Length: 228
Image (cartoon, rainbow, N blue to C red):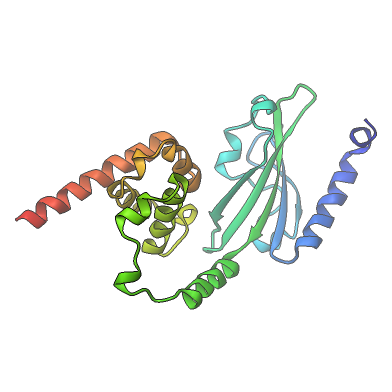
């Protein structure tokens, strides 16, 4: 295949420079090589002044876990949100790199600082939000009549509005509070809701159920307090 034969190192670096220029000043690109260890894995950067990372720096923790694994199970790029050292919010696309044996040896991470975009999104939502009268609020029968997926999305949006942030950016305490809210709304009775919640909260199923148990415990304590 001609394209594959011509995708050499210099070409890829040149292409990454172009991608960063296309996206603009709020974008940085970090290239990792794990073969010599993780203490100095960053081997190339584009516009890394954005986050302050430098050549010779370390990867974020999640990257280390995948070193040496078969690329076939990890070949899809991973999209996630994370907080920077100064509180910035980044949307990141991480693509793992394989050697000739199909084993993971590095990664290319495209990070876009979206703090201002998220703030603008919140402002726009607040500005365009139409105040609802009590009679305008959907009652339980109206929600139940909707498609199951719509019901799930309805409560996920309500959860984000309640806590004032996206599910991806919630702290541990906010996630526990959110799960308590969702549990009370019966969301976990919806098939495969736990899978979607793990993706949205960016946590494992084990962590999800630990948080859920804590949320249930707190809800029960609140209920007991109200009886006294």
